[in-house]
Length: 271
Ligand SMILES: Cc1cc2nc3c(=O)[nH]c(=O)nc-3n(C[C@H](O)[C@H](O)[C@H](O)COP(=O)(O)O)c2cc1C
Image (cartoon, rainbow, N blue to C red; front, side, top):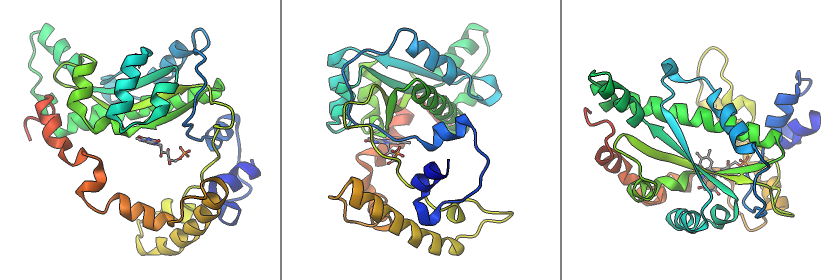
């Protein structure tokens, strides 16, 4: 456990003497994987992972999410291209597309002869996206507990309407991210990437922004150590990397026009 906390925060920033459990150890061990063996998933693994995903809490039990399991090589290649050429999408045996899904609720209401104008709100888009994210993270934990690996693919939002038409999504349904799923290729298992010191994230009683500066400086040092070991080509500090990621509209890989696309796809029409 100590070792896992050292890896998760960098030894200088790790909390010590915390209670532990098998579940916490599994979560502390998480790492994204970007290289996969072609081997199919073990029998029943996909269904077990989806059962875990469906076990996540869901707003008002609406279950406003769906998942599309993509195994067809041509479809995965199209996803990889839409995501800016991310090869791991083609390599992984199963590519999961997590869908913020208000289409099912629209249909349920239609079939009951009831209105569904509430679904036209930003709130319901958030409900569906949060449901999808909670389900997906349960899927990640379940997959890792079975010895499988994953990486989220937010780049599936780069061209949301193209993704929707490729997979037959109706109005009120949008892929909010993908998730590669499979067995890590030799040497591609990844390393535990440090996170911000808890002093930056855990606020006791009241939020304090300025008090985070010291913790962020310590995190820059921890990430510099990590990158020197794992990604020597990365020279920029986390601070600089993160600032670049939010520097301008062009940093968003086309997602700066997401709102307009989502409106055309049937979301938050009332706003
Ligand atoms: C919603 C979301 C979208 C992501 N999109 C991508 C992506 O498109 N491509 C990629 O290689 N990694 C992607 N990632 C993975 C992150 O880069 C990764 O989780 C982060 O660097 C921390 O590394 P770790 O997961 O190994 O701890 C995404 C992660 C999340 C949560």
